[in-house]
Length: 167
Image (cartoon, rainbow, N blue to C red; front, side):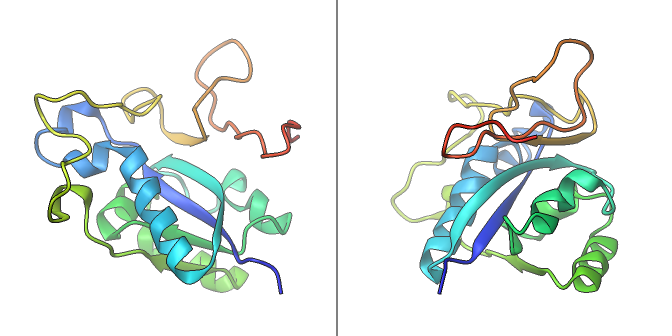
């Protein structure tokens, strides 16, 4: 029996919100939480998504599902999911329609884990996401590296572990 393949959802949030909600700005910690959740279940993260207000029917969201590379989505918490997709109820409905599981990790955020320093707080160095909601609305995978010149793309893909670019 193979590993369950998971797409981890993180939300792109403007840096202006760092003081009010550091976790929503810190996509690395969001993905780390999803990875801990997946590891606890014996699942493997195969995609890291960074979303902001993405329509639930956007093709890029479902391409890896349709290709059989992802079997379920996981978001760190409800706040992240609410920022990531345009409508949580519509996303849940679309997941149900397609037979795709959607899970919420629900683990402690880094700033609330006893004995652990917050990953990103006001006044301390923070690795912001490669793009922010103010830059464009849409989806990025992995590092947010642009694949072509021109305006910010709506979708970029992370290269798979084998190093070959996907089409």
